[in-house]
Length: 70
Picture 1 (tube, helix red, strand yellow):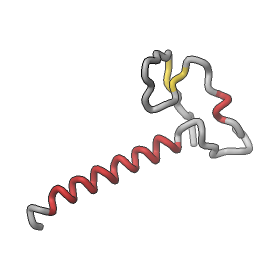
Picture 2: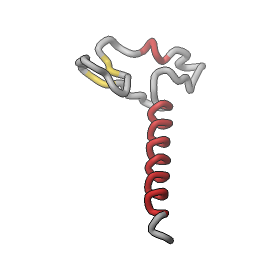
Picture 3: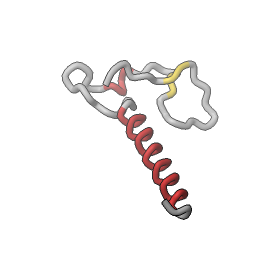
């Protein structure tokens, strides 16, 4: 493999990894409904003081949002 291909392979692998992480993070967010029968509105189950965003400027929260199951 020529040396010129290494940066392309590295950046493509990095982009695929970041895209996979973002898809997994969005799938676990409270905005996504996976089970309409048992939990039709998962965003209503978030308690006050829980951080569910990726990046929050100037806010301090006691806990972060974790989805128990998809």
